[in-house]
Image 1: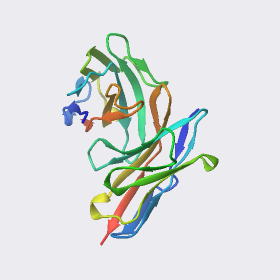
Image 2: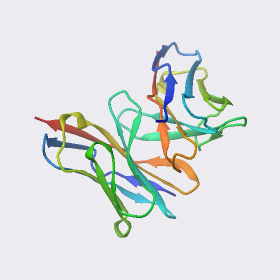
Image 3: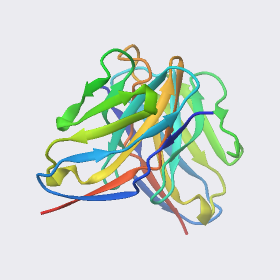
Length: 113
Length: 117
């Protein structure tokens, strides 16, 4: 069975500080990995995805994530956060031919001035 | 880019009534759409896979008679919550894959918040 663990329920960082959100997955085959962001009362917006190739992927809004197969991780990073980054972040895993994504429980990001 | 629209964004209904939520792909055709349910401060739980022209595939534990899904066209899937009760109150989100834009890349709607009184 596939699963995603986001160990941090809530993270608070200062504006301008760096950010890393953790994601660990379990998947029986080659995983397709995603990070989505959700603003309050809104749907999900895709930040970035990893299918294959370079394990460091760049996304929108200055986010990047690194796939580490040995650690079954796909952590999300941003070098300098902005107040507008405050939102809920979800990591998800799927697979080739498997469009059903399994989501983690999310990490709520709060930005303080 | 691909856009998925959901309507209504918010709905309040009385217990025992039925509510229909629409999910439309605005600029692409979607043979498959997915319906998720999100509880407060929780993750998204896949409820069912909606297939155009055929029956939906429900995840284990989801009552197919309570959550009726119809995918009558390549751009529209509907979720009807029948005989709604307060425990059905939730945020419902649909998603669809925009053709060959990238395998497994789903576009999500903005969600529909259902409150059952």
